[in-house]
Image (cartoon, rainbow, N blue to C red; front, side, top):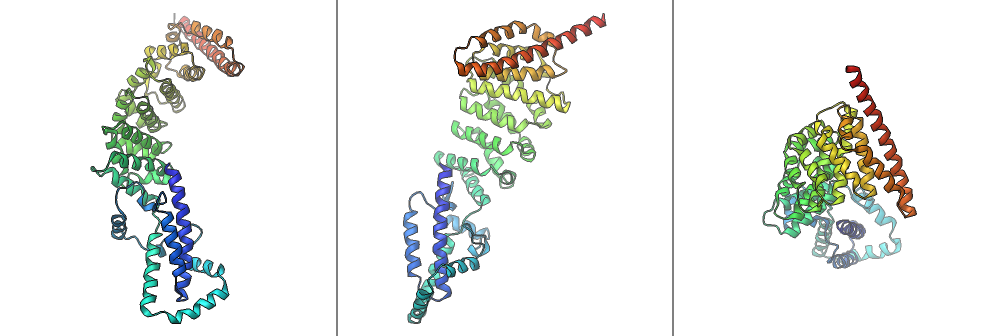
Length: 412
């Protein structure tokens, strides 16, 4: 919805921009701008609905307040800024207007200028100035500041707060915008909203933090520095599947490929949260898939980096939870669990005998039988891929178990 509104606002802005070009041409030639003014009035009337100024994104403030803020911040007129829609300056806009005007008509109107009084000319200049100010388009940074100002406004309605968050969710996608978020107070405001009484506000705030920190070491470090991981781990226990899922998304983005983040995850007993998600029958299967995917990601990072700070990944209790999940009839979940167990088996710290004590061989055998009995042809194709992975994991397990037994025999 926010994207649709942004598109509509950009279309309205381009239309008004063309009207400004005509108005500028009239001003240079000292011609009346009645036609341009009428066109602007029509465009403004058409924009009374959803095509409101982009400067009013995510805010309950009126135009006067926003204009005053731009003035105080040193915001200039359109002259100082790059134009949207292909115009780099007033000069280029003027050249466009001249090139797209009827020379005969311009000559006729030039003659009429002699009839205008000084007051009428002044009035035309004021109209053009007002139009230029109306077309001042805010940058992403301006829009982010507006949204963050709303988050810091304790008297704002929940609806406006949620709208501000939804627009920030879009604005933080570019990495440069995400990097600027902390500079303008955005991270602090978002982290505070993780404690909001409203579930939707908490959920969206976690979503934004996850999106901003994804594959972004700078933002990961900033959020971790504010201690947000502790609150996110608590949100992972939420009875709301959506809130817990967005918390898991944020946690995964924060600690992925980040040693400090993973150490903080360990300190905050993130492993207990994962075990809760994996063991609870009431946990939404989509959330369990996210948890299993995080396990795979952590195991792969530990293997590739040589970092061994997450000992819980190889603990017998944790391994048993993973094995038990293979008995749940969901092909996608079973595939993700097999991938996780394969990664865990590759860790030097994983003892194959711990898996053996979980009757892992029998579990794998029953899974193979189950995959063969799937009736749907479409399922059979996917089941064949999962079964190939099952056999790979079984081979890896047998090899590692053999190594353990050989080592034990040599030690005697």
